[in-house]
Image (cartoon, rainbow, N blue to C red; front, top):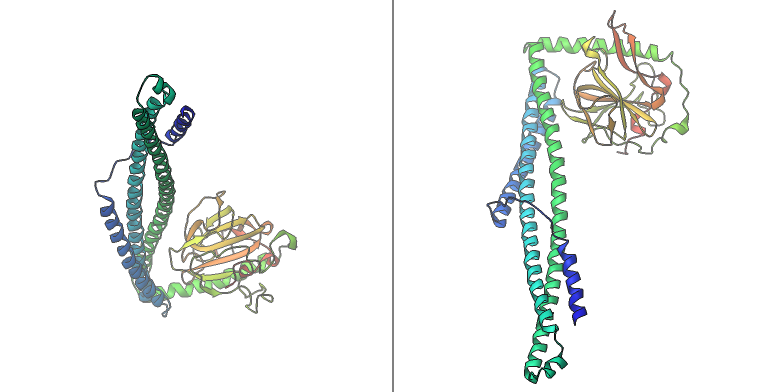
Length: 429
């Protein structure tokens, strides 16, 4: 008997080590009241989702209309409304997750207190067992106790042992519930951090679109004719710059080692945007295996992307370089651009961005927001341009620009033979 009691005491000590020192401020609301608030936020998120979609659809519709100042401003207006609703959705999600964490935290504290109460009860039962178990039945007889008293003590000992076993079972059950709650609490905390990062990205997007609105109205002075003249000027600059670049890059030499990059069609990289809409393909567009970059053709892939859309890294790698050609010569090159070199031997340039989101030398993971799409450089409308090459074939180089005499522009440069079709390395559509 004594041995059994000693083992139970060891179990108790082991369970005691499971106590977690926590310092929670209990919410004034009950679990039911917290759940009601969580449900209220869930319904609000559903309504915001519909509002986001409505304004996003209107923005898409106006962006596909004939390109005029009024349609462009209308697109930006609808973007502002859509992103504003999205910001509110993230804020609501953060409040909802906070409420969920509070509800779980309160349950954890309640379970820990329950374990403490069960442990105290079990300690008392063990003490009582030792008191009864300290004198054997034979010793009771020798002490001239009557047989009935001895039998009652044996029955009482059995009841106490059953109580101890029941307490052990209850403690292990509550402990299991506690572990589930702690896992759920960590999941919600992780979700909260993710949502906070999303909110920062959405707030950046909103700021970018509002700034674009103000800038466009300031430049055009809200005159349709001024807007059309700017578009025509950009088209001429684009054509002149592309010819200049091709003539320069044609003189460069590069011999590709096929083993240094992933195979075509291997889906080695992910998409650079969450929503994919291809507006212009690489080269002559004569099929994946026949597409080639040649004079007069396209040296990358263009994706439809409204101003302020988060642009994502397509793989793990590093920000090798970035810049803004508009600072020295507006409208003739990539505008704001980023060069990423990936760990798998490929590299990509993102052009016409509205904003950078990381610094040169920063390590990136697939899906990291590296910038935001825009309408900078030689762009006649908001989009994301992606060029791709073997990583060892491209570098950011400063060179004199014929399109802007007396100015040296820094941008990614590669031999004509080094340009690859980006779609050959992205997921199959």
